[in-house]
Amino acid sequence: MKRYSVVMAFFVLSCTLVFAHIPSFLKAEDFSGGSYFVEDIDLSQIFYYEFSGEETIVFSFEGLPGKNLHILFGVPVGVPVMETTYSFRPRLAIYRPDGQLKDGFDFTQTEPELMYEFFGDTNSYKYLGYDSLMEAEGTYRIEISSREAGRAWITFGLRESFTFKQILMLPEWIRQIREFHYMKGLARWEIYGLAGLGILTAGVIALIVFL
Image (cartoon, rainbow, N blue to C red; front, side):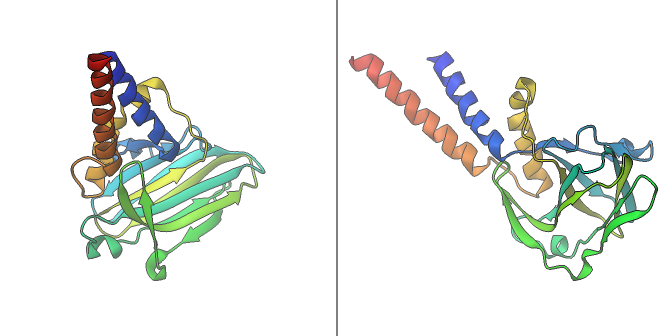
């Protein structure tokens, strides 16, 4: 019975992966070398960062001509809706390997899209959904600049891929994601999944007892 419960819990957690990016929670020291290098920009992953004040962080990655760069960028909404997060508008700029600006975004006048994220059961103000082909081979840079303290996230890639070790990290990741979005407690799908697991387990016990 214990083995059955573990299998069912693993199944519930694994089902959420179709909605998930691999998360990383970065600190200022991660950028101490000048930039944070993203190994695989095709892999679906999300980077969370809390700005301490006026600050610029840089992501770098290798690009090839004709390869697509997929990015989402936003800030957490928080619960209840926090006016302080709505007014937090970092700037984002993408630079080609030759140092020339590819695209720049100032979100001061942008009306964000309210985006729900199933994995953490959170809401964000999404300011950018970006897809663009890269023109040259070399190291690209993304600079995110803020004039004030606040939290923001950026995603890369569309390819979903998780290792077994990463799957085991899901509960801890969810806790960290919800804390980043100013939330506490379990995600709704976790609550429903645990309730469903309890019902299934009770049903199996009943079958064993009465058959």
